[in-house]
Length: 260
Image (cartoon, rainbow, N blue to C red):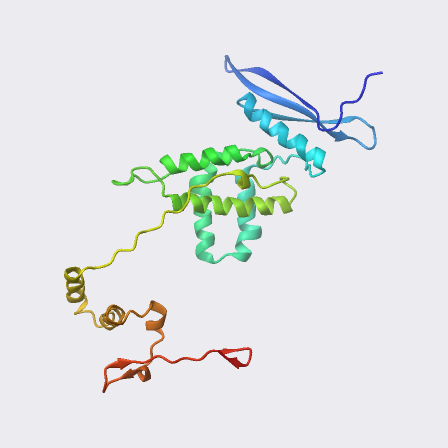
């Protein structure tokens, strides 16, 4: 009597199909996802990919999930379909309108054209890492004379942040067992070096704003006092002493019926 294959076992093989008179090769892994409780028959599932390594990684992830008891049935939903659903079901309820608009732009401009058609159940960290590299090198939609087609680190990082949130919610829906963004290495946002005006530049700036009745007082106060933007915006006429020409700020904040 033949032994039953253990749940989580699988095999990989190369397959060839003919389309329009040409032959195309791909790799397929078949594995046992469990047994039907009614018939006792094996539940067979398959994974396909362009390379043996890609399929092997996906098979390893699936069998590990079966062994750990966290396996979920592969969804046929694509990444693009899930992101459309996620934007309406999750993001629209928790994000500000400007952030939501930015996420829709990311989905349509950067994600869908690259991995939108891939089933969400089989997206790997390697797929996302390749996406980040591609966006970094040539993701800019419009040519820039200085940066050409290169996308900034900050922009790629925003793609990563959005995908991380979307895949976290995909786990709640039972579409994927774990978040593939966790094993990626997105670019770090570059810190912008602070530039300080020298005396000549400062003089030119002050002359440039002299005619602006609205902003002159604001910038003059900022440059001559060192106050932060929020502090300047909170100034009152009572803070200014015309006799001495001094600004004195003394505020108390009520917290839980107490003064701090």
